[in-house]
Each structure stands twice: as structure tokens, then as C-alpha cells.
Amino acid sequence: MSVTKLPEVWLRGPLADVPALLQPVAHALLQAREELNELMIGFPEVLLWEKLAGMASPGFHLQHLTGVLDRLFTYAKGGLLSDEQLTYLAAEGKPGEEETSVGSLVNAFNQKIDAVLQQLKTTDESTLTDWRGVGRVQLPSTVIGLYTHSAEHTMRHLGQLIVTVKVLKQ
View 1 (cartoon, rainbow, N blue to C red):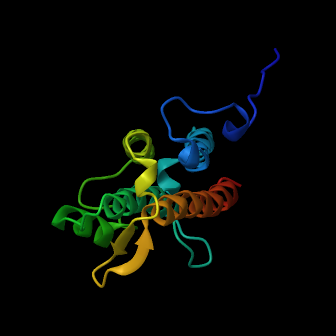
View 2: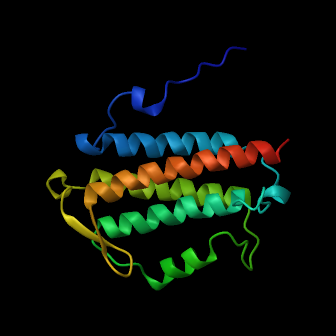
């Protein structure tokens, strides 16, 4: 049986309703979603919180990928983090009181990708260079800086997750 593999997302053409200047961000986030979903198929629950050489567990990366997108896109809208977001941040890397499964973490990431893509679609390109404060001390950034960092940061953690998962599955 022959399986036709699609080209990477960025080679599939423009995404409907995403402003031209934000296409690379959307492409990177969709690519990350595809790779993460494929990577995590059949990943053993028992390995979710395992750390290799003191590095972050797959569970941390899955939580962090979702949380950081939520935080960066909040800043891009000009918002401050809510108590709920700060609580989520503090809990990243911990299974929590309720057992967190691979499936639930992957689902949360997929839902966050859907939400941030919607935000990209509604972003006015004329605001991309507008100043945005990051964190409690409001370090300087811009809307496009936050969006670009969200794509870069997502791909960086995906790369770390790929290596960790592949070694743990050996």
C-alpha cells in the first residue's frame, strides 16, 4: 500500500483568511501540530513524565507548548496574564492531582492551535509593529515579535519533544 506524504505545510500554499505577513507563523504552527500528533500516536502513558538526563519530560513539553502559546497570544492582544494562566504556568511539568494523559495533552495543544489560528486570522496587519509588553515587568516587544516568537518557540520545544520521545521509546 502506498501512502502519499504531503509536502510541509509552508509548501501547500497560502492559508485562507490568514494575513499575508502572518502566513509563516500559521504555517509553522500547523506543521508543529501535524508532527506532534504523529509523534505521540501510541506513546506509552507510563513514560509521559519520564526525564532523560535531567531534561524535561514529554509531559512538560506538551503542557508548555499549549501554555506558552496561550500566554504569548494574550500579550499580542495587549492583555496581561490571568490568575488561571499563572496557575497553569506554575503547574507545567507536573502531572497534577488529576492524571493527565497523552491524549488530553495532545487535545489541549490542538485546541490551542485552533484558537491562535483564529486570532491570527483576525489580526489587522497594520497593528503588527504595535508595542506590546511581556511579563510582569512589561518587557518590550511587538505584535509580530510575539507571533514570530510563538512559532519559533513552538518548533524549538517540538524538536526537544521529538528527541525525548524517540529515546524514551527505545
